[in-house]
Length: 327
Image 1: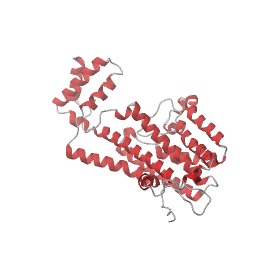
Image 2: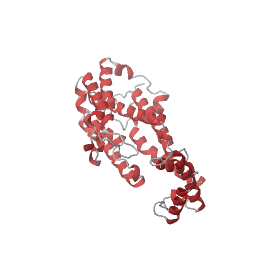
Image 3: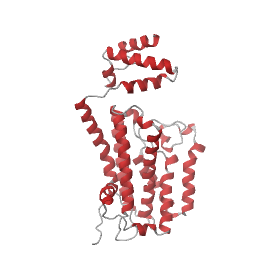
Image 4: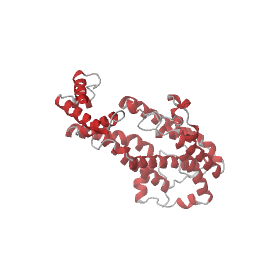
């Protein structure tokens, strides 16, 4: 039976310039696998946020590398999709439709995080990067692959050479050239991340030259992987926008019913981290344990974590801190 093309939120991954554009299932599956990996990382971050996972879990080396690998794979596939969709001529209507959709979702994420987590406000995350990089990558669709690889190397290593205090301003943080990284829950700047979609374009050019995409077309179509991971990959933007609010909502409901977890480990971790900037580790360990116990005895520990008590201004909290420091 002829393969029925599924309507998708991702117009790439099809051979440009033909009336009948068949998707390459393997690319959809790869994107779906990346989305599942991203979900695992985000769920772990959510557990940490609600106190159900140890503090700084996602800051450990393995989790950091895992997160960077996920982001790299997404951006690499952006480059591959751009090549497949526009290498025989840019389809401007499809391109701008996709761009506005991604940029609009990026704006929604910025707006939501501005109110929800102002301390980790996402002003240039993965969707912001995909929108901008898609525009910047267009000229590279029509130059030799080796020149695209050279450009990718410049963006990969260029941040070290070009970093300057002149870029340490909010209007230029997106470049990635500031010596100090801004605080954000998702930050994917131009340097070095633009190298990933460029490598995707370069590898797609080589694959097309060797006829790999033509050979990949019939592989995994209508398979179990295509019906699961491939389905997610074909609707990646919808999945991305829905999965995190859904998980956060479920964890919030669970925490409300089950009661909040013990915040003591998180408090001690954050306290000792802040204290160690100007004091010895042994002092910080005893001071933070004393402070935690004192706040609990004064019934200030839970209100503090609920944002109802400011330790820097509350008289009872200040008295506890002074006593623990003296001891």
